[in-house]
Amino acid sequence: MSDTPDFGFAHLWAQGDALTHGVALILVAMSVASWYWMLARLWVWRRLRGSAAAVEAFWNAGDLAAGLAELHRQAPGTPAARLAAAAVDAVRDIDEHTARRLADGMDRGELLTRALRRSITASRRHLGRGLTLLASIGATAPFVGLFGTVWGIYHALVAISATGQATLDKVAGPVGEALIMTAAGIGVALPAVLAYNAIARFNRDTLGDLDAFAHDLHVCLTIGTQPGAEVRALRVAAKGAA
Image (tube, rainbow, N blue to C red; front, side, top):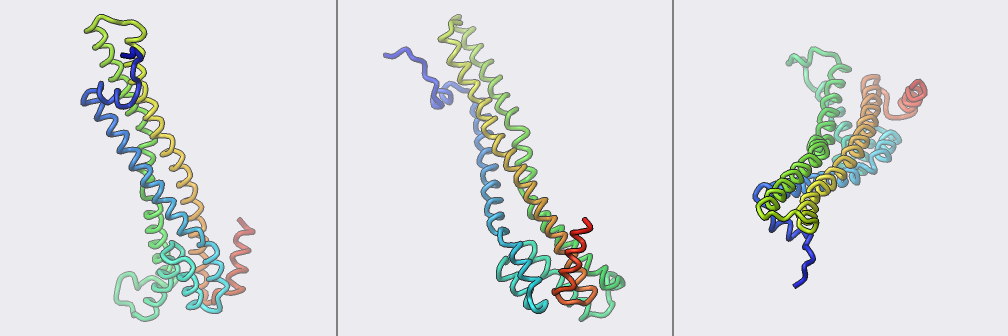
């Protein structure tokens, strides 16, 4: 028989106790959860990829109804489409109902601002789903792996003390197997941290564009202009002032 020590994962699992197995399963669960949210956010990115062109098509439309239809055709279900629909619904509700509620005591601009703010808040909440989990995994996975390493080394030292053999070939195997936990923790944390940073930046840019679109919609629907040259001139002036 060969005297070469086995450093494989199967040997690590066989030599580990219940606590070591629990730490390994926690790291696996963390990895599965982080990759699920990374892939889910990637799907959202693909859906939002055409939002800028759809918003431009909205402003280039001949009237509000045509612009809204074009926005829903090119970017259905996106935050921009939901924002435009919320604004149009708010204006329709204002025009069709008399003052029967507390909210109806506000003027047209305030009611529209309220509807736009609620839509943006819902979009921010939707875009931020999974970010807390990714941040938590990125922050805690290395320490979970380190805990598994410390426990594995302690377990190995107890076994060595019981046998009375502390030669290098007896120590290297158990200690090397325990250190795999640290590598596993880092391997789980790194993708989660990188994904968190990328998603946070994407969300920040998306919400910035959404705020600008909400401002333009507010100007269009309160001043009473149609989405045409006047609104585009206001947008250019606002960007130049910024």
